[in-house]
Image (cartoon, rainbow, N blue to C red):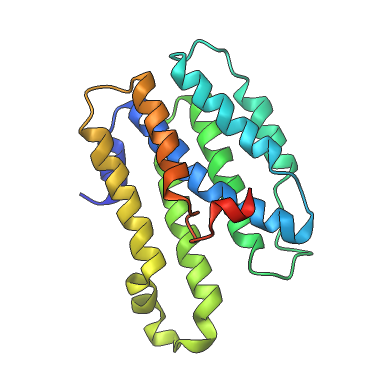
Length: 199
């Protein structure tokens, strides 16, 4: 099974955990962009993720206004126009991933949560292509990306989290706290940025 099929095989709560985990790994990319450009604000993104984690901990009883959080995320989403730098694309992708996850929670739509994994993977691919395209012949770029350590790491991290979730009997509060701690322990974003240097 490919990654999308594996995500679809997870339970609804497991899919939420995976989506949140991937969004957490993308958030520092936005924070880095904000530090460099002073555009936007990472607080709505952080707030949206915290609200989702808390709702998961409470079994969906906290009555989170996902639509309002989505509006806040959209308000601080950058555009490639006006930002002539590579970092704008990972920042946009972080916002897209969080907004997509929120839409999935609004609609209770598993497809949106599956799409978060696709956005996370595509973010890494785009970053490698834009960063290294001048040094790699066009005919070799696809293979270059597939073999790149960042892309391989992204696939490995997604697979490891899917395997971990499948090995657990349920999504319990201790598991949720453990996954949040995993992000901190890894210490790097999906693009290899060190989280301690950003936060």
